Amino acid sequence: MQGTPRDTQYLCRMLIPPGTIVESNPGSSITKEGAARMSTWATALYASAAACSQRCCASPCAVPLAAGAFAGMTVEATLFPLDSLKTRLQSGVGFRQAGGFRSIYRGVGVTAIGAIPASAIFFCTYERMKERHGSVLLASITGEMAASSVRVPVDIVKQRLQSGLARNFAESLQTLWATPGRHIFTVFRISAARDVVHSGLQYPLYEHLKCMAAERSRCESPEDLPVWMSATCGSAAGSASA
Image 1 (tube, rainbow, N blue to C red):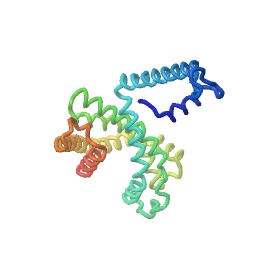
Image 2 (image 1 turned 90 degrees about the vertical axis):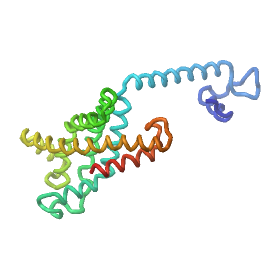
Image 3 (image 1 turned 135 degrees about the vertical axis):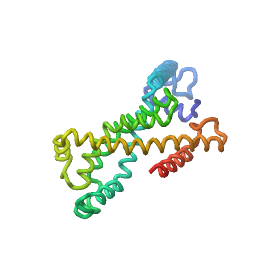
Image 4 (image 1 turned 60 degrees about the horizontal axis):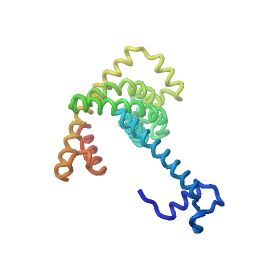
């Protein structure tokens, strides 16, 4: 990409020591040595970017891992107040006793941090299984089973903080550590079954809606859809599967 003269002058000032004078063109501030230095730095920068791109392409999980981690953390942090209210409404001690509308962000740090590995594991597993076996249903079920190994302990800690059964993260973690393994396994089975059914409906429907939208928009593939259209398909699939 060719830059403007102003951009070129700015790069020259950054790369070449001040006070240099061009022998062949008195109106310029670039010498032959400065131009050579700029070319060397640009070549090194291009080589570094190319090597980074090759490493990302060589690792097929890199993009799903990063995208899934960021998306999961953002969604959990944004919707956390609604999740807190839902947990307190479902609490056996009652909504007001569980905290009511007070401190609805209690436990958001645990949730956001826990969503990073859980979402990364899910999307990496989902993309790999879909690419290898060609089944969206199998990919979504496998992804949820893998992600539940991280999500379930995080949910237990989060819900204790939301419902006021633990005053802080350390106390909630101690309670989790003292919880019998059979109880955690029971929670894992219930949570995994719920999430597997949800994802088993959501992601096949999501992929189907994207294919329909791509066909109507005359896109070559569903991956070429605009972001807003893909988001609309995801919202419709999530609402239907909920």
